[in-house]
Length: 323
Image (tube, rainbow, N blue to C red; front, side):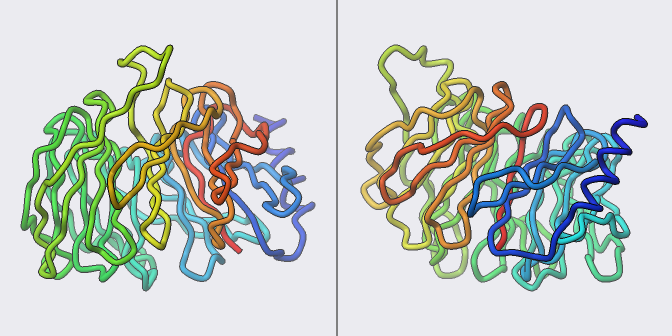
Protein backbone atom coordinates (compact mmCIF):
# COMPACT_ATOMS: atom_id res chain seq x y z
CA UNK A 1 0.00 0.00 0.00
CA UNK A 2 2.89 2.39 0.84
CA UNK A 3 4.38 1.67 -2.57
CA UNK A 4 1.05 2.36 -4.28
CA UNK A 5 0.60 5.63 -2.41
CA UNK A 6 4.13 6.67 -3.32
CA UNK A 7 3.45 5.86 -6.98
CA UNK A 8 0.27 7.88 -6.80
CA UNK A 9 2.08 10.87 -5.32
CA UNK A 10 4.78 10.68 -7.97
CA UNK A 11 2.19 10.52 -10.73
CA UNK A 12 0.52 13.67 -9.45
CA UNK A 13 3.84 15.49 -8.99
CA UNK A 14 4.91 14.55 -12.50
CA UNK A 15 1.63 15.70 -14.06
CA UNK A 16 2.17 18.28 -16.77
CA UNK A 17 -0.14 20.93 -18.20
CA UNK A 18 -2.92 19.64 -20.43
CA UNK A 19 -1.92 18.54 -23.89
CA UNK A 20 -3.93 17.31 -26.84
CA UNK A 21 -4.57 13.60 -26.72
CA UNK A 22 -4.89 11.44 -23.63
CA UNK A 23 -6.32 7.99 -23.09
CA UNK A 24 -7.39 6.89 -19.62
CA UNK A 25 -7.49 3.12 -19.07
CA UNK A 26 -9.14 1.54 -16.01
CA UNK A 27 -7.22 -1.48 -14.70
CA UNK A 28 -9.75 -3.72 -12.99
CA UNK A 29 -7.35 -5.91 -11.02
CA UNK A 30 -4.60 -3.34 -10.57
CA UNK A 31 -6.99 -0.73 -9.08
CA UNK A 32 -5.34 2.00 -11.13
CA UNK A 33 -5.84 4.30 -14.10
CA UNK A 34 -3.10 4.35 -16.74
CA UNK A 35 -2.73 7.56 -18.76
CA UNK A 36 -1.39 7.26 -22.31
CA UNK A 37 -0.36 10.18 -24.52
CA UNK A 38 -2.15 9.53 -27.83
CA UNK A 39 0.38 11.55 -29.81
CA UNK A 40 3.55 9.79 -28.61
CA UNK A 41 1.80 6.56 -27.45
CA UNK A 42 3.82 6.66 -24.25
CA UNK A 43 2.50 5.99 -20.76
CA UNK A 44 2.48 9.33 -18.94
CA UNK A 45 1.20 8.34 -15.50
CA UNK A 46 -0.61 5.75 -13.43
CA UNK A 47 -2.64 6.53 -10.33
CA UNK A 48 -4.87 4.81 -7.79
CA UNK A 49 -8.51 4.71 -8.93
CA UNK A 50 -10.34 2.90 -6.15
CA UNK A 51 -11.21 -0.76 -5.84
CA UNK A 52 -12.05 -2.64 -9.04
CA UNK A 53 -12.37 0.26 -11.48
CA UNK A 54 -14.34 -0.68 -14.58
CA UNK A 55 -16.56 1.77 -16.46
CA UNK A 56 -14.83 5.05 -17.30
CA UNK A 57 -15.92 8.22 -19.09
CA UNK A 58 -15.13 11.94 -19.31
CA UNK A 59 -17.07 15.16 -18.88
CA UNK A 60 -18.07 16.86 -22.15
CA UNK A 61 -15.16 19.32 -21.90
CA UNK A 62 -12.69 16.58 -20.96
CA UNK A 63 -11.70 18.23 -17.68
CA UNK A 64 -13.04 15.49 -15.42
CA UNK A 65 -12.78 11.70 -15.52
CA UNK A 66 -15.48 9.52 -13.94
CA UNK A 67 -14.71 5.93 -12.89
CA UNK A 68 -16.99 3.15 -11.64
CA UNK A 69 -15.17 1.92 -8.54
CA UNK A 70 -17.25 -1.24 -8.34
CA UNK A 71 -16.06 -2.61 -5.00
CA UNK A 72 -16.26 0.85 -3.38
CA UNK A 73 -19.90 1.27 -4.43
CA UNK A 74 -19.31 4.76 -5.79
CA UNK A 75 -18.14 6.74 -8.78
CA UNK A 76 -14.71 8.25 -8.25
CA UNK A 77 -13.92 11.56 -9.94
CA UNK A 78 -10.52 12.85 -11.07
CA UNK A 79 -9.08 16.00 -12.61
CA UNK A 80 -7.85 15.00 -16.07
CA UNK A 81 -4.79 17.26 -15.89
CA UNK A 82 -3.47 16.87 -12.35
CA UNK A 83 -5.08 13.45 -11.63
CA UNK A 84 -6.17 14.82 -8.28
CA UNK A 85 -9.19 13.04 -6.85
CA UNK A 86 -12.30 15.23 -6.58
CA UNK A 87 -15.46 14.61 -4.51
CA UNK A 88 -17.00 11.28 -5.46
CA UNK A 89 -20.55 10.61 -6.68
CA UNK A 90 -23.11 8.23 -5.18
CA UNK A 91 -23.71 5.32 -7.52
CA UNK A 92 -25.72 2.61 -5.86
CA UNK A 93 -24.12 -0.81 -5.24
CA UNK A 94 -21.58 -2.38 -7.60
CA UNK A 95 -21.52 0.18 -10.44
CA UNK A 96 -20.17 -1.44 -13.59
CA UNK A 97 -20.92 0.71 -16.63
CA UNK A 98 -22.49 4.13 -17.06
CA UNK A 99 -23.38 6.76 -19.64
CA UNK A 100 -23.17 10.53 -19.25
CA UNK A 101 -25.74 12.70 -20.99
CA UNK A 102 -24.33 15.30 -23.47
CA UNK A 103 -24.92 18.16 -21.03
CA UNK A 104 -22.73 16.41 -18.48
CA UNK A 105 -25.36 16.85 -15.76
CA UNK A 106 -26.86 13.37 -15.34
CA UNK A 107 -24.98 10.10 -15.10
CA UNK A 108 -26.89 6.84 -15.67
CA UNK A 109 -25.24 3.95 -13.82
CA UNK A 110 -25.83 0.18 -14.08
CA UNK A 111 -25.91 -1.47 -10.63
CA UNK A 112 -25.22 -5.10 -11.37
CA UNK A 113 -26.00 -6.56 -7.93
CA UNK A 114 -29.29 -4.72 -7.27
CA UNK A 115 -30.92 -4.82 -10.73
CA UNK A 116 -31.14 -1.04 -10.90
CA UNK A 117 -30.10 1.88 -13.03
CA UNK A 118 -29.15 4.77 -10.75
CA UNK A 119 -29.44 8.35 -12.04
CA UNK A 120 -26.97 10.71 -10.37
CA UNK A 121 -26.72 14.50 -10.66
CA UNK A 122 -23.03 15.30 -11.21
CA UNK A 123 -23.39 18.89 -9.98
CA UNK A 124 -25.28 18.35 -6.72
CA UNK A 125 -23.80 14.85 -6.23
CA UNK A 126 -27.20 13.44 -5.37
CA UNK A 127 -29.23 10.48 -6.62
CA UNK A 128 -32.21 11.61 -8.69
CA UNK A 129 -33.82 8.23 -9.36
CA UNK A 130 -33.42 4.46 -9.16
CA UNK A 131 -34.95 2.55 -12.07
CA UNK A 132 -35.67 -1.19 -11.61
CA UNK A 133 -34.50 -3.18 -14.63
CA UNK A 134 -33.70 -6.82 -15.45
CA UNK A 135 -31.27 -9.13 -13.69
CA UNK A 136 -27.58 -8.15 -13.79
CA UNK A 137 -27.73 -4.85 -15.67
CA UNK A 138 -24.51 -3.88 -17.44
CA UNK A 139 -24.54 -2.17 -20.83
CA UNK A 140 -25.54 1.49 -21.04
CA UNK A 141 -26.25 3.50 -24.18
CA UNK A 142 -27.95 6.83 -24.88
CA UNK A 143 -29.81 8.08 -27.92
CA UNK A 144 -28.16 11.13 -29.54
CA UNK A 145 -31.13 13.31 -28.59
CA UNK A 146 -30.74 12.11 -24.97
CA UNK A 147 -34.40 11.11 -24.77
CA UNK A 148 -33.69 7.43 -24.11
CA UNK A 149 -31.15 5.48 -22.11
CA UNK A 150 -30.71 1.82 -23.02
CA UNK A 151 -29.70 -0.68 -20.36
CA UNK A 152 -28.88 -4.32 -21.12
CA UNK A 153 -29.55 -6.97 -18.48
CA UNK A 154 -27.21 -9.96 -18.70
CA UNK A 155 -29.50 -12.59 -17.19
CA UNK A 156 -32.87 -11.30 -18.40
CA UNK A 157 -31.36 -10.99 -21.91
CA UNK A 158 -33.16 -7.75 -22.66
CA UNK A 159 -32.49 -4.21 -23.77
CA UNK A 160 -34.55 -1.81 -21.64
CA UNK A 161 -35.38 1.60 -23.11
CA UNK A 162 -35.70 4.14 -20.28
CA UNK A 163 -37.23 7.56 -20.85
CA UNK A 164 -34.97 10.31 -19.49
CA UNK A 165 -38.05 12.47 -18.99
CA UNK A 166 -39.77 10.36 -16.32
CA UNK A 167 -37.28 7.49 -15.69
CA UNK A 168 -39.72 4.77 -16.74
CA UNK A 169 -39.13 1.86 -19.10
CA UNK A 170 -40.98 2.41 -22.37
CA UNK A 171 -39.77 -0.63 -24.36
CA UNK A 172 -38.21 -4.04 -23.65
CA UNK A 173 -36.55 -5.93 -26.50
CA UNK A 174 -35.40 -9.54 -26.10
CA UNK A 175 -31.89 -10.17 -27.42
CA UNK A 176 -29.46 -13.09 -27.26
CA UNK A 177 -27.78 -14.42 -24.16
CA UNK A 178 -25.80 -12.07 -21.90
CA UNK A 179 -26.08 -8.68 -23.61
CA UNK A 180 -23.09 -6.50 -22.77
CA UNK A 181 -23.15 -3.19 -24.64
CA UNK A 182 -25.53 -0.83 -26.46
CA UNK A 183 -24.36 1.59 -29.14
CA UNK A 184 -26.46 4.03 -31.20
CA UNK A 185 -25.41 5.45 -34.55
CA UNK A 186 -24.74 9.19 -34.47
CA UNK A 187 -28.02 9.97 -36.23
CA UNK A 188 -29.99 7.81 -33.80
CA UNK A 189 -31.57 5.68 -36.52
CA UNK A 190 -29.99 2.39 -35.48
CA UNK A 191 -28.93 0.63 -32.29
CA UNK A 192 -26.46 -2.25 -31.89
CA UNK A 193 -26.59 -4.54 -28.83
CA UNK A 194 -23.82 -7.10 -28.29
CA UNK A 195 -24.55 -10.50 -26.71
CA UNK A 196 -21.48 -12.17 -25.24
CA UNK A 197 -22.69 -15.77 -24.83
CA UNK A 198 -25.19 -15.59 -27.68
CA UNK A 199 -22.30 -14.65 -29.98
CA UNK A 200 -24.33 -12.07 -31.89
CA UNK A 201 -25.01 -8.36 -32.29
CA UNK A 202 -28.70 -7.47 -32.39
CA UNK A 203 -29.52 -4.67 -34.81
CA UNK A 204 -32.53 -2.43 -34.15
CA UNK A 205 -34.00 0.27 -36.33
CA UNK A 206 -35.18 3.24 -34.29
CA UNK A 207 -38.29 5.21 -35.26
CA UNK A 208 -38.47 8.99 -34.88
CA UNK A 209 -40.30 8.60 -31.56
CA UNK A 210 -37.57 6.30 -30.26
CA UNK A 211 -39.45 3.02 -30.73
CA UNK A 212 -37.05 0.14 -31.50
CA UNK A 213 -37.63 -2.71 -33.95
CA UNK A 214 -35.31 -5.72 -34.05
CA UNK A 215 -34.38 -6.21 -37.72
CA UNK A 216 -31.25 -8.37 -37.86
CA UNK A 217 -28.63 -10.31 -35.89
CA UNK A 218 -24.97 -10.25 -36.89
CA UNK A 219 -22.98 -13.44 -36.23
CA UNK A 220 -19.25 -14.10 -36.50
CA UNK A 221 -16.98 -16.83 -37.81
CA UNK A 222 -13.18 -16.93 -37.71
CA UNK A 223 -11.14 -19.77 -39.19
CA UNK A 224 -9.32 -21.68 -36.45
CA UNK A 225 -11.26 -20.02 -33.61
CA UNK A 226 -13.82 -22.05 -31.67
CA UNK A 227 -17.33 -20.58 -31.96
CA UNK A 228 -17.69 -20.30 -28.18
CA UNK A 229 -14.70 -17.95 -28.10
CA UNK A 230 -16.47 -15.45 -30.36
CA UNK A 231 -17.99 -13.35 -27.58
CA UNK A 232 -19.14 -9.84 -28.61
CA UNK A 233 -18.65 -7.34 -25.80
CA UNK A 234 -17.62 -3.71 -26.43
CA UNK A 235 -18.68 -1.97 -29.65
CA UNK A 236 -18.20 1.38 -31.36
CA UNK A 237 -19.61 2.82 -34.58
CA UNK A 238 -17.98 5.59 -36.60
CA UNK A 239 -19.72 8.97 -36.59
CA UNK A 240 -20.49 8.68 -40.32
CA UNK A 241 -22.31 5.40 -39.64
CA UNK A 242 -20.15 3.41 -42.08
CA UNK A 243 -18.27 1.04 -39.78
CA UNK A 244 -19.09 -0.89 -36.65
CA UNK A 245 -16.19 -2.32 -34.62
CA UNK A 246 -16.99 -5.17 -32.21
CA UNK A 247 -14.64 -6.57 -29.55
CA UNK A 248 -14.84 -10.37 -29.55
CA UNK A 249 -13.43 -11.15 -26.08
CA UNK A 250 -11.35 -14.36 -25.88
CA UNK A 251 -11.21 -14.58 -29.69
CA UNK A 252 -8.61 -11.78 -29.39
CA UNK A 253 -10.07 -10.00 -32.38
CA UNK A 254 -12.09 -6.94 -33.30
CA UNK A 255 -14.67 -7.51 -36.01
CA UNK A 256 -15.06 -4.87 -38.72
CA UNK A 257 -18.68 -4.63 -39.87
CA UNK A 258 -20.26 -2.60 -42.67
CA UNK A 259 -22.82 -0.77 -40.55
CA UNK A 260 -25.12 -0.25 -43.54
CA UNK A 261 -25.20 -3.70 -45.16
CA UNK A 262 -24.40 -5.43 -41.81
CA UNK A 263 -21.81 -7.62 -43.54
CA UNK A 264 -18.74 -8.67 -41.53
CA UNK A 265 -15.78 -7.42 -43.58
CA UNK A 266 -12.72 -8.42 -41.57
CA UNK A 267 -11.24 -9.38 -38.22
CA UNK A 268 -8.33 -7.47 -36.63
CA UNK A 269 -6.01 -9.46 -34.36
CA UNK A 270 -5.44 -7.59 -31.05
CA UNK A 271 -4.38 -8.50 -27.50
CA UNK A 272 -5.79 -11.24 -25.28
CA UNK A 273 -9.42 -11.03 -24.12
CA UNK A 274 -10.30 -7.76 -25.81
CA UNK A 275 -13.04 -6.04 -23.81
CA UNK A 276 -13.86 -2.35 -24.40
CA UNK A 277 -13.15 0.16 -27.17
CA UNK A 278 -12.93 3.90 -27.71
CA UNK A 279 -12.08 6.16 -30.62
CA UNK A 280 -9.71 9.07 -30.28
CA UNK A 281 -11.77 12.28 -30.71
CA UNK A 282 -10.67 12.66 -34.35
CA UNK A 283 -11.56 8.97 -35.01
CA UNK A 284 -8.13 8.32 -36.51
CA UNK A 285 -7.50 5.58 -33.99
CA UNK A 286 -9.50 3.00 -32.07
CA UNK A 287 -8.10 1.78 -28.76
CA UNK A 288 -8.92 -1.65 -27.30
CA UNK A 289 -8.43 -2.88 -23.74
CA UNK A 290 -7.00 -6.39 -23.57
CA UNK A 291 -7.54 -7.82 -20.09
CA UNK A 292 -5.38 -10.94 -20.18
CA UNK A 293 -2.34 -9.45 -21.92
CA UNK A 294 -2.41 -6.27 -19.80
CA UNK A 295 -2.13 -4.00 -22.80
CA UNK A 296 -4.08 -1.85 -25.21
CA UNK A 297 -4.05 -2.19 -28.99
CA UNK A 298 -4.09 0.87 -31.26
CA UNK A 299 -6.03 0.38 -34.50
CA UNK A 300 -5.66 2.70 -37.48
CA UNK A 301 -9.33 3.28 -38.35
CA UNK A 302 -8.84 4.26 -42.00
CA UNK A 303 -6.58 1.27 -42.71
CA UNK A 304 -8.54 -1.02 -40.36
CA UNK A 305 -5.25 -2.41 -39.07
CA UNK A 306 -3.63 -2.78 -35.65
CA UNK A 307 -0.48 -0.67 -35.55
CA UNK A 308 0.88 -1.06 -32.02
CA UNK A 309 0.31 -2.38 -28.51
CA UNK A 310 1.07 -0.57 -25.26
CA UNK A 311 1.54 -2.21 -21.86
CA UNK A 312 -0.67 -0.67 -19.19
CA UNK A 313 -1.83 -1.87 -15.75
CA UNK A 314 -3.19 -5.15 -14.51
CA UNK A 315 -6.32 -6.37 -16.33
CA UNK A 316 -7.33 -3.26 -18.33
CA UNK A 317 -11.12 -3.02 -18.60
CA UNK A 318 -12.36 0.38 -19.84
CA UNK A 319 -10.94 3.23 -21.89
CA UNK A 320 -11.88 6.83 -22.62
CA UNK A 321 -9.97 9.36 -24.73
CA UNK A 322 -9.96 13.15 -24.59
CA UNK A 323 -8.31 15.97 -26.54
